[in-house]
Every structure is written in structure tokens, then in C-alpha cells.
Length: 315
Image 1: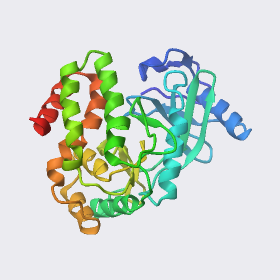
Image 2 (image 1 turned 90 degrees about the horizontal axis):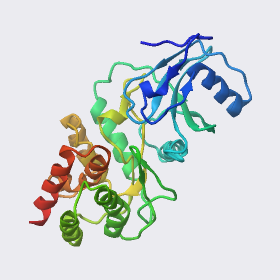
Image 3 (image 1 turned 60 degrees about the vertical axis):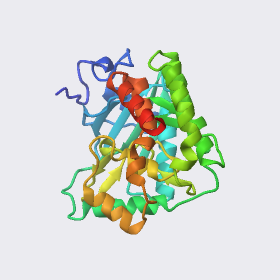
């Protein structure tokens, strides 16, 4: 592992961690610049080291004299407003009584890079009722409702823009703000075809019969096992949101996409905020959106998976 002390005699290329960046930077010096810009204070990091797990951003753990933080770095030009949107998403979750989330310490842009500095979470042993408690907190978040589907700003889902223009109608929102942007990108890049579009058009006409209409709920929006952590008190903390006011089943379905959570999580959720009958049959339908995102990011087997699901609901 590479360590950065107070005055390291070398620099690390972000290319080694994040292929989207090219310039050589010194993370310790960068953190000093961030502190100066955000707080007009001088800071001397004790230790800065890369953190694993980030596929989009370069991520560092920085030990400071009085606290430990996480610093996320990415190109400001390639992903404009990504960290500003992430901060807004975290602020929204905090406002509406979500499961706990890390505090934002600073968000800024310096030169060609954008930065987000968050509190660092020390991991504790999981509480015995970890998934039960997590489900109850998520249900509390989902009980927040509003009049329209969407959000007052666009954000990101992974490395791709997510559009949140408001709609009073759930089905039009899903078609115009979720499916169509991803489909256009997939067709423009040759990953999907006009025949795929025809099947999706057929799918769209059947959405009102397949998805029960519910008021918009505030959802995390990218709820899979990589986006929650075990906090110092042993409970679940959410990270990397893609928030919007959408049908709550989108969160529950996505949590099942890559292996799923513990069965106790789903049992506990249904006990406190029961899902409409037939949810199990709608999981693949909800997961078409995140799978389309994966088609556009990675291609490969996700293309066949998307085609298989669309046929399942249209043929």
C-alpha cells in the first residue's frame, strides 16, 4: 500500500486508481488546498492513503491532527456537478430522517478537479438486529411523500447522469426520466438496437397494469450492498445516494440485484410498511433501469439480461 506522509518525496498518478484522470497530484498537498479554500485554514495531514472500493472516483482516507476524513476526487469536466449533487442528496436524506449518513465536511472544485470531503466511519461490530433495524429506518425514509415524481435537480446514477424532471404521473416519469435516456445512450453506442426499442415501447404501454400506483416516496436510488456500511455503533449507514421522489419499490428491488440483503431485512420491512401484492413478480421490471445503466457502463452480459427481462414482460 502507498502511504503519503507530511512531505512525501513522490507523487501518485490518479491513473493508478481512477482511469478518468491524467494529471499527477499529491493527495496530501491537495487536502491542504481544499482546507485553505473551504475554511481559510492551514492543515497538515498526518497520513493520506488510498481507499479501495471506488470504481468511479479516487478515494482517500486522510488522518488529520484532530479528525479522520474521506476525500473523494474526480474530474470536474468529465462529471460536472457530481459531488455537488451528492452533497445535496445526502442533505436531503438527512432532512427526511433516513438511516444515518456521513456528514459532509467540504465540497469544492479546484482547477480541473472536484472534491468531496466526508467524515470517516470507524466500523463497529454489527448489532444483533442489524437488518431488522436497517429495514425499519428505510421504511421510515420511504414514508416521506410529496406531490410529484422527480427532484428539483438532476444527479448521477453511478457515472451516468440521472434526470429528475418532475412528473405528476408515475409511468410518464419512469418512461421519460429513467428508461428513455438510458435507451437513447445504449442505441447511440450500438449496444441496443431498434428492435430492442420496439419491445421497450410495448413494455411502456403495459406499465400501468404491472406497477401499482403509489405516492412518490423519497428513495436512496442506488441501494445495493456496496452502498451501505456498518457504522461505529453497529448500524447501517448509507453512502453514494442517487435520491429522488419515486416509487419505493425501486429501492427494494435494487437491493436484490446483486445478491440481495439478508432475508430478515425484507421480512422486517414488510412488517412495518407492507409492499403491494405481487412485488416479487415486479423485481426484474424495476431492475431494468439499473441494468440499463450497467449496459451503458459495461455492456457485456448485461445486454442479454436486459433483453431477457423485456421479453419476459412483453411476450
